[in-house]
Image (cartoon, rainbow, N blue to C red):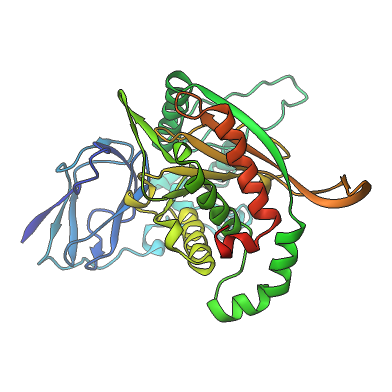
Length: 386
């Protein structure tokens, strides 16, 4: 029986996607639940599994095509049998011993070499021509690093289309700049209390909870505590209204091979340090594999971005619309600071809060960042709620 493989229903905010890579070809056997193709939306890459076992009888839409929910991608024959596979040896042309040796030396596929000899046989000259052809520079369709200009004066360029994720990120960044009155305020935090607390308990924490104790859980907890004191930073604008959110869904910016994604830790105020660390570790692993769901990347009332993992000392993070605040973490450096009239060396981090000045006053923004700093410099306050 022939059944249709269709694009599934996506989220309300996602109306189309781009086909990335077919993992099966026409005539291939597939098992039920086996991934057939990756579908890139402006949020995530989705896997489209086979609804039943069978043979992929026809591919209707090809890699790179834009598709919408309900579009037919392929036909699956649930009753067909798989034809015996054709071996590579059967496809390879007959080669003389000298030609076969030359092919092996240059790691070539003889089946891909056009033969000019009698009956289409591959000659030594054919192999050498293929070697010279393979040595010529080519540009693949996927992004690659452009080499430095050669000494002969060549100036190579490459034009590649934006991925859907990159295009969507660009669109939202421009939207944020055009619609919000973005300002940034800065402060610094002495990370020594958090580092000492973490070092004292990290081994027992990992043994007890099965996850490492990082710094992000402290920042999430500190952000939630500050958001409770200054609810405007947790709010958003909808037309002429301000929506004050009575929950704390914290977006955590995570780097992935496709670009920056922001999965959301829901109800962060109700989670323990271990719960937060487990979610962040899970998000990071699945972001690298492209396994995050649309729901996990949707929403959020406040965002934390950690440029410090890349070595950033200071930056001005940009808002994630329609949110009104984003906290930028940076790299911790040992620096001389004054304490009780003495110069001492402390592990210091610069903090940045970008905020929408339409609903967050400068005073609130500064005090919000001060509240985060105070919570981190005295982490017991996070446990006591003071």
